[in-house]
Image (cartoon, rainbow, N blue to C red):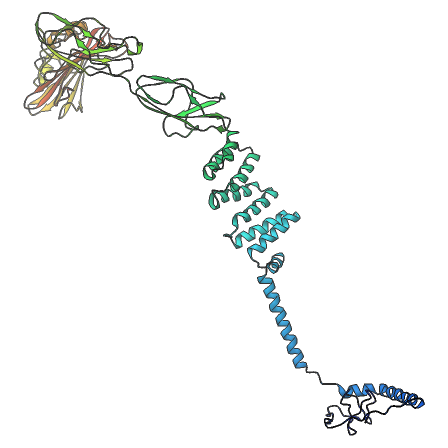
Length: 592
């Protein structure tokens, strides 16, 4: 049979062309779901078509066209015959797989890729720090400063230890500045140079820029110094030098000197100078320099700065070591020995260089037995009168720098009469201390105007004070009764020790006792004697008037116990105004 569609010959029993798949026999109707019969055409040999020429050919062609037209009309039936059944379960499964794959892909895209994280950040969803840093930059470029700061702050909160934290913080600082939040921007830049990169100039420069914009020059200069120290970048030092004053200078170079020096500080630009000699904070705790400073012996350290408004220069630091020469001890023109009669002695200056007025030497001496000090009588180049008895001449030299020499100490024995030291035998008006009872005293001077118990650390025991118009008497209670230990009187009728009286001159009173004849010192005080066994006596001026003061005698009494007697003359207008005799039951002398 020849197929009307492809014109090929096949097995006559076939209904379906094995070459083109078209129906070749009479049209058959199949019920949906019926199987289409299949035929085995493998052993069929095709018949060779017969060649037709001329009118017969045209007739055959017309017939063929009519046959095709008829088959075209029957095509829908044949398509229905060939349709296959759709598997919707499979289609649904494939669609589900596609949706799931799309969801997985989207999740991976949004959560893994940088562009996906940026989308999440734009939506305000959870995203990594880099996405928010990128978003913040987008906002900043678009002029949304507030949103930019929020994005940057969120990025910093998500990853506070970012591997590129410094560059990220610089973005945040830039956003703060754009938003007018200069304080926060400075905090960010400060963190960079304090915590993250102290050796990098980046944080310092941005902080300095903000400080200078606000005229905080004092803080800025301090930071410039720190930046130079930390980074070694000399641009900071040059920048600082354009702001701060030049440091002060000293007129005397630091070093060691053998003479006193006067040093002055100078500001090259005429600014105020504050200086310190210890660890004071400059300039707050320093002293305002007002004039040259004289350097005495010792080590002198100075630190000084110049101050212009609120700007402070670098510190100037100098040290001076002054070692002043010590004068030699004075010499005498009289060798130590025994001499008869009145003798005098002079002191000799052993300094050889007298050209410098500062090297002029002063002598101070004593002949009362005390060590010589600058409070002793000054030697006025007059002969020193030596009193009778054993006399110790002690002298020192003090040069113009205040340096004190070693002490001259020589002893002379002068054979001449002299009075006794004050001692325990000296009594007041015939009354013996610690032996005259209260009853005996009343018999002589009558009943007191008033009496009362008192406490007195001079003695041990209960004490009574008896008040009279002329003064006071004190008694201490002992096993033998109440005994007199203190008598104070201004009564001219009462006779003091060695017939001294109220109203007599101080010279007359002093001549009753041993007196070495020592002259007064520059204050008017005078040492009378100083003996290691007997005690001491002196006159101390009570005011600027040398005719008013206290003439005191102290005697140390050594027996079973050591006690002290004190005799005091109150001097007023160079006369005795009051006499006090006192007993103390212990040693109070300064004699060692």
